[in-house]
Image (cartoon, rainbow, N blue to C red; front, side, top):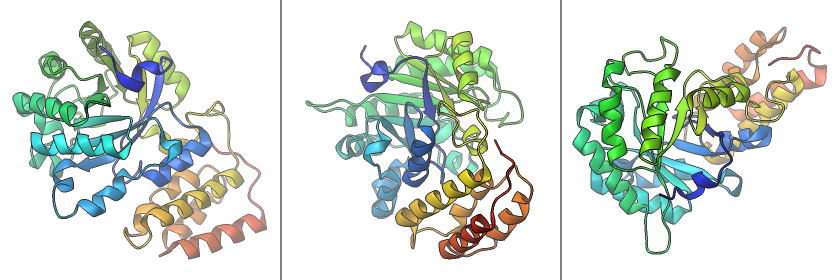
Length: 330
């Protein structure tokens, strides 16, 4: 079984997780400057929305640049015909792969029967995988299909039966977040069960990516070696360290460097979202950049009060001109 671009990657490979209102084209450009992962994901996008009147707005979530490749477009939904069209669109837009979200625990998503709620309808889940694969394939080009999921809804006793459903549908890649929906992020990720999932996937000639509690690349590599996954995915860890995937990911970075990165990100965000999204979506990133040195909390509080990019640029520029602390921050 061929897995498209995935099988060309050196193992263990690194992946930045899809995160709503986070992994857009602006943030990906910042991570690429810091040191990119082997694979990027988009934010997850509603396949139903792409088939509705709001399609043009959602297409902004699927914006990509040359520096993004290889990149996977992630979708959620409950209608096979919508997933088919989403896969076709991703292929036409030039994405390297597609993914269907079967693990999101957000109540709004689950009320639609999508995300982790698909664990309640395994036959539909299989149909969606088939539809996405059909849509992402043509006579001239087939892009690989991944499925991102959790260990179960309420208990890890559900894991094997659920994964058998997914693997029987023959995706190219299985991405496993090592917790149940009920556990949320309250417990440590069950990497031993991720290891069991990897063994199941490999038996079916499917690649497996583990996700959960990874805060640096060396830890991800070690977990892959210990539990037999082909790669690792990082989510919240990128908020602690935008340089996580780089060769200097565990080095310390000066406030000066962090603040220049904040300005770069703010400018990129404005180019993509200015006049479309509230600036509040950008401000939530400021904790990523403004923390870890004396006075950082006060500066961050000041930035959070601002209504737009122009005021933020002025405050940060003035702060830099005064001279930033010499202390470094991780």
